[in-house]
Length: 466
Image 1 (tube, rainbow, N blue to C red):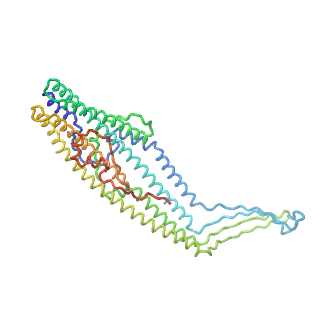
Image 2 (cartoon, rainbow, N blue to C red):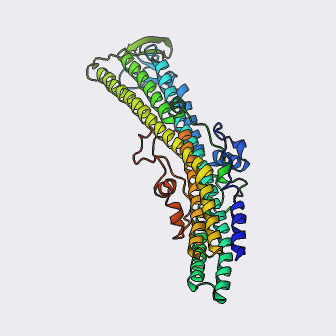
Image 3 (tube, rainbow, N blue to C red):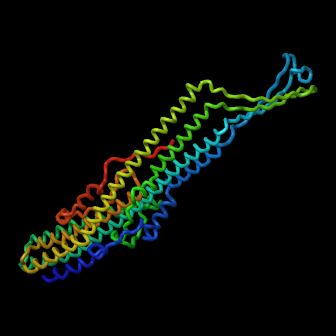
């Protein structure tokens, strides 16, 4: 009977990454050097993903538009023939019969070409903001997927520890039942918990394969390629929380909205210049055979006589567009501030919850487990009490892992500067009916099973491009 009591300390000490995880001081945003595995995943994803390549191609495409916008319009070459009468060519015989070769070069009003280049350059700013969003979202997806993989593997280790205890408990219950000192119910309950653990293990294995497939998709690998990990979820460094100004500086949506405003302002200036006429210079020569050739030089001027219905309307159109783009900047900034505040609140709450687990809940849960085992050994408590005390300890460990995962999720979303709801990092289910008793006392567990702390339901405006 003392075997059961001797097993408890060993099981508790076998989980240093869970029960005895050290408190990590706040550091800067995790760099790839903090974890070689994560560094390799990020390098592969950012270097190979088709979405990155597509975004890069879009930026280069828009950059090619800048020199095009500043070039003069294509000249025109005109070839002609003028002849007197229909009885044959009179070139060289009649003074008014000749061939003609003319060259015409249009010239926009001064300043128009420069403004068109500035409009194209602002368009590059929009596409660069879009590329930044693709890169930041891809990096965030890799970090979330990696944290989810560590969460599932931590849960698997937790179930493995519980399985060791339950196997020992099942043997002890069987021995006591066979010698008439225990009940059949104790044996059946231990066997039931072992069966539930087997089901939960299968579920976690499926979750692990799903997490692997997701990470391998991001790095363009085969879905089944293994990803060995060298750290636990508790070992991931916690980044320093960003200030609202830092988040604004990182936001691609805000940068894109501001680039749209700049582009629209240049379009307004260009529309105002369109009220000015454009010019065209023509030079030509008219050979007349044996007679002396003729030549001509001319200047043509466009007449914006429909300015009230055309150019003025264009100015008004772009003015309205500029007002709309300015309103979008304010909308994005306001929503970004809200999301930043929400995440800062959740980070603070999750930090306090994490510290409560480390300094109180896990210690108390372990003490409760040991006390229940001692009472069972002394015959003052039923086997079910010891079993539920273990399940409570495992449930608290699982809730602690979920708290760490959601803390990472909030930091990742903060660094991603996303306008939408914070994506949750979820693992598998620990799937024992009695485990819920231990986890029910933890708000973090119930919150993480439904959605990430602070997760809102609406999403922000998408980045638009002119």
